Each structure stands twice: as structure tokens, then as C-alpha cells.
Length: 310
Ligand code: SF4
Ligand SMILES: [Zn+2]
Ligand SMILES: [Zn+2]
Image (tube, rainbow, N blue to C red; front, side):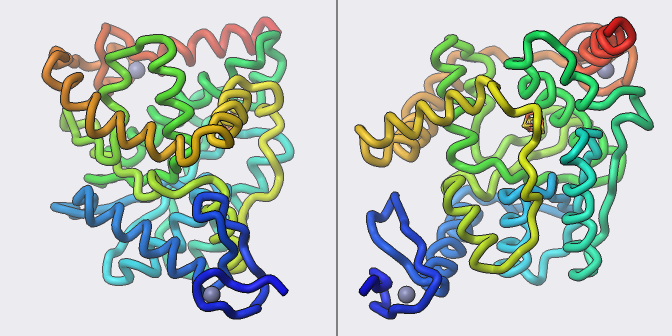
């Protein structure tokens, strides 16, 4: 008979914890997950000096796990939720319903930003592109820019996102592979604000895995968008995540060790050698930018062109 590796009970469901190489019952798993997230938040001082907090929620398992675990761990901290409607057919409608339901049931303020309404295109429009391997990269630029903009325009000083260990290691893996030193130095649990219009970002789930987020939403019986984004098929991001999981089969705890090495060994050196970036205002949207037009505005005008000529 299968038993929980901690309390030895035979309660169901039992979660197979690949990182711990054991089974955990629901209650021991929730305890493990919540302790881990709490330790991360406290260890990196994520809530230090926060006055107005927003949490970015797509409606997927990671962000729903973040909303729940944050409410459980820090019930005294008020936060609002920001959701971007990306207009992805067969996916975005479910995402918004899940987030709305959670916010209504828990009396949380919800801000929804509609990409089509304000920018004239949707991420769904990109499905006609020939090179769909790049869609997630394009979508990532759109999401990062808009999340920051909505948070800034609504007076938030900190934005929490649901990036977990798998997400961050996948990004780092790619940056190291390409020697993108500038970007590497920005990957950390807390990204401080470098400009009044750039909101401080925190990643409370940076030390928990994809699998653990999924177990948490199952264990807590939470709704999350069960439909997969249809644009993810064939994306390089998924290929890399699968490759990293295969590496982890050969090198136990590879993801965590990679992250730790990055944070403890490489970041201090990168910081020492990197030049401070001078930011100016984008001529189009007036948000911070390295050049005269920010990457989001450049991308938006290219996307509108693709869409019109598709
Ligand atoms: S899977 Fe890719 S395209 Fe779909 S929402 Fe996520 S980042 Fe965007
Ligand atoms: Zn147990
Ligand atoms: Zn711009």
C-alpha cells in the first residue's frame, strides 16, 4: 500500500514528488509547498517596502497557484489582480472566466486589459505566421510591456508574477546558450525598479516547479484554465523545457542547481561588469526605452503589418 513519505498516512490523493523522490499526501504536500513559497518570499525580501501590490494572473495553473498560496500565506496583505486578454481563440475566454471567478469569490480587485481594444490586434492573429516557433517570444514581449504599463498607470509599486523554477531555468538556459549577458543579469527573484515607470517585479514561485504548481491547484481544488494555448505547439520554449527535464533525469536537481549557480556565482560577477543602462521615453508610448521607440511599439507596428497583409 502506498503511504505518504512524511506522515505515513494512506490518504488520497498521493502526489509523486520527483524532487523529493517520495509520495506526499495532500496535507503534507500543501505544507511543503506553502513553506517553500514563504521561505522564498522572506529570503529575498520580496515584500519589503511594498505599498501597493498587484499580481499578474493569466488563469493558468501557475498564476492560480500564486493567487491562492499568497492569500493563504499573507492574508493581511491586500493585492489586486491584473489580467491581459490576449484574444487567443479557444483559450482566452476560459482564462478570463477562471480569474474573474477567483477574484469575485475572494473579493479581490481585478483589472482586465484588452489587447485588441487598445492595440488593434490579438495574439491569436499571430497564428497565421509561418514561423510559429517564435510566437511565445513575441507574446512574452507584449505581456511584459503591458503588465508593467497597467501596473504603473494604476499606481502599483510591485508586480508579482507566476514564473516558476521551470520557466526561469528555461529562460536562463537560452540566455547562457546565446551569451546574452545583458538579459542574464536581469533574471533574479526580485527585479528592482530602475526607472519611475518600471515597476519592481517579484517571482514568489521561483523555487517551485511546474509539477508542484499543478499539484497545488489540484490539492486545493482550484479552477484553472485547462485548455492549453493552441499557439504553444512546436514552440521552442516547450522543446527547451522538455530538454531540461531530460537533463534533470541524468543530473538530479539540475534546475535548482542551475538557478542557484546563476544567482550566487554569476550574478555578482555580471553585476560588477555590466554598465548601467540609460533609459529614455519611447516616442510612441512614453514608457521607458533604450532607443527612441521601445521594443513593444516596434513589435506592435510589425504585427499590425503582418495582420493586414496576412
Ligand atoms: S503559450 Fe506562448 S503564445 Fe500562448 S499565451 Fe503563453 S507565451 Fe503566449
Ligand atoms: Zn502526509
Ligand atoms: Zn513604446
